[in-house]
Length: 105
Image (tube, rainbow, N blue to C red; front, side, top):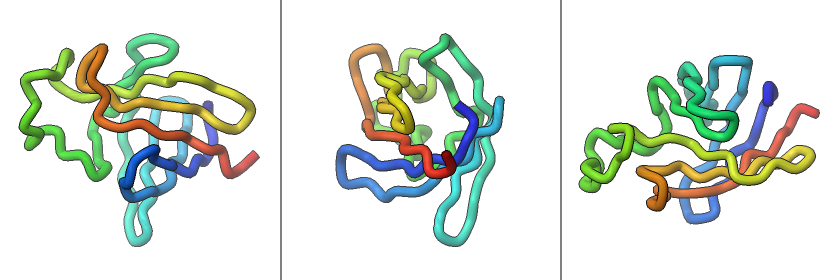
């Protein structure tokens, strides 16, 4: 999964790029960036140790619904250079979804 990806949301959220290197993710915005550690739960689900993107889950009104007290990413479908994902509160409650499109093949 290592590489640089463009993040494209299914809904109207701002996009950005991420760079995955083994056990870290670097979120790249227009004028800054943030690095988070990856904590894998399974081969298709992971936490970011510091969720730096637009979502401030600590202020989320539905925080009580989080199964692990924080959001986690679920990788849905992987094909060639595209990975579909969902950012989840719990098993059945997605916060958002989108695609990771690899940009450095």
